Length: 295
Image 1 (tube, rainbow, N blue to C red):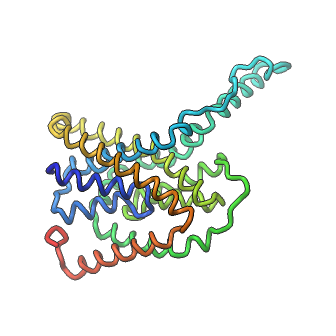
Image 2: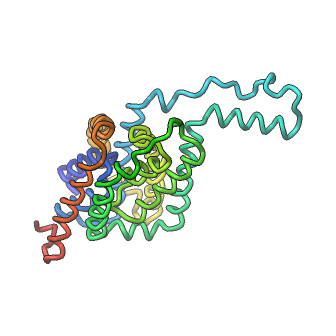
Image 3: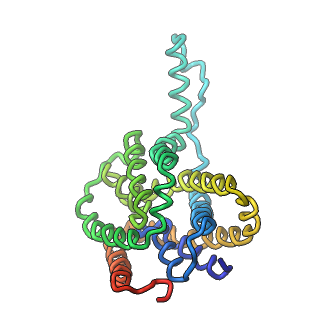
């Protein structure tokens, strides 16, 4: 992989990571168009540069990520008259309440973490299929044409409850096995099915991407380093990884600001049309016998 190819892929990642158009799907398509061989390093690269993209969310939402509730966990006044198990339950409850933001992210990560550990090989195998990506782009696009109509009712209570966190976490799992569906799309729609409005569903999707993608990157890195020559492979391509992450970070900063405002005002329809056009066009080429790497 050349530096130019790495920069192109990183730009695509930064632009699409938080849009409901599938960043992984777009990177697979771009790799095919550029004629980049699907090696262990290229698979690792596409996962690793997501770290740069998600770091943009931490920077943009710094206060949300590092602002905890002003609750004193071990407050003796809160456990007056309690003893033993009841006192412990009170302390645990206050601890969870203080770190509520992180607790909800942890809960939402559990389904994806478990399935990722159990079916990592199957997920990697699916990542190599351009046809699956194109089909899921079209299917997801059709769905997005109508989602604003189907999920237009919202609740007055927009807080992320335990139930909402679990449901959004399970929604995310669909994108793990179906590249082209879009993790962002799955989690945003998962949030909207619980009657979150578009903005709050999108923002929680952004937040959930941070531990999810960080975990995926670490698991992938450990897997590569366990292979013979894996550590040398990463060290030899360290500058490519750094450049990719920096580019993805900068581009994602711009994309997130654009997306949250656009989605709040205009909804999903334009993203659905885009997905159908891109997926349909590329699927037509593939079925017509074209080699995308030569297109």
